[in-house]
Image (tube, rainbow, N blue to C red; front, side, top):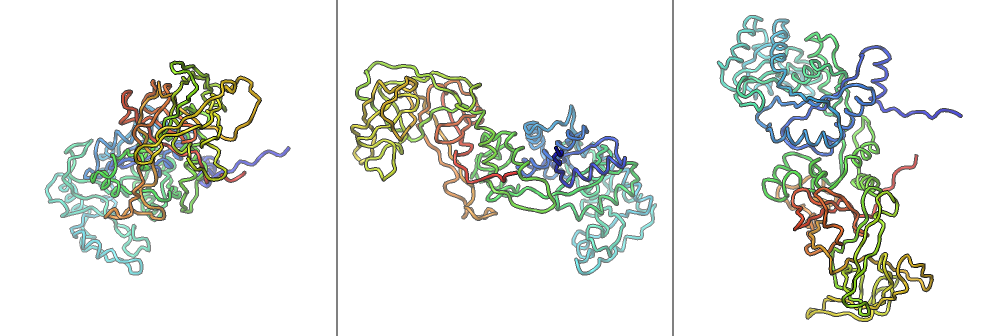
Length: 554
């Protein structure tokens, strides 16, 4: 029998070749977020990819905060990123790193470039630098300060570090090629003066390195072998390679680019999310309508479902857009065997069984998950008055409606057959109570083999029911839109529906925040980690039970 071929993505093929050629003894990858906001599902792809490769090749995975821009960075974001990365199961060992840990090495690297004649201090303003840079069709123009002597540049750069010049008055630029077809190589700025208190180094520095200069140094100092990033950095790779080459690192890292993860009808831009949060449109960065990792966690999505989604999305060099239905499919697949299947009535009306004894009640044993017997069983109370879903009764039903209507018989799940005999309306003509009779001989599990019924509905015992608030979510923006409009005119008015006074079976009494369940016929739900209390239970719908996505058959 022929052995099955193992499909390798293009990054794995590169790593395999590097190992075969003996370029590296041990694979080291990294995830380098800038702590200027909360991570979203696109970042999850990078986290899972980089940590997964390190594990696959018995290597090392580093978590490093790229904190070279203190103007936008906060310790709050550092803490949220740490929680997100740990939750996704990425093993970064017992330590994590900061780019600012290497500020001394970066400064020394800049001095080395000056001594090699590869960097100079420039007095042009930011506007003049842009003007001198040229265009995609026209070469740039050299700065009049480009030919300063090595000694003058060393002196000026040290004085920049010592705080002798105003912010923005001077920069340090790499001396490469103003006629390069790649604009990133046209004498890029690698240091600027900026008097800002840094969350890690405080006020030690008043000059800060630019990302394109700092990042390759961070990778090289940490011994990263494969610097895996998204496609927008492809044009920056020549500068990355130039930095590690000119600074003569013995084992320079290799940058590899892959396609970002894009999802339809979701908002990932930090500017938009920040505005939504500040304007009170959403309940913080972890609002379950967002796709930040903290929002997905609060909504009840599991890390296993996200990993499955990333596996299905694949790793490629070509940008594409994934359907949210694929993520929802992964959530269902992950939870269907894990979650207890319990009874919750979201839009309740009273069901009265007229011939059931007034004061009597009984306990019915119900499987927690018919597909996973390891989850065991529970005892559910049953009595004369129950709650059922409003949609499970119709006064004048259409054809093929098999639930309750006058004269029709249905099964109450795991209980008895009941026949509708009457109903009560309020003054506005709204049905508030349904009356029926039950047949004691039809108890579920009793071996009854008489007449058959086509409809089965779920219920909750009114005597022991728990009141709860249930939140149902839809896309935050209207279908077909990709970007949130500044005036919010394309916000989906149905993005959040909050149902009060829902009725849950008594087994929910001991629920803890973050626990996940399947509410029979209503979907998968999670006890909200922020607002849930034992006295006031709040549940978020993770995903409905219906799916439009079909995975490709292998």
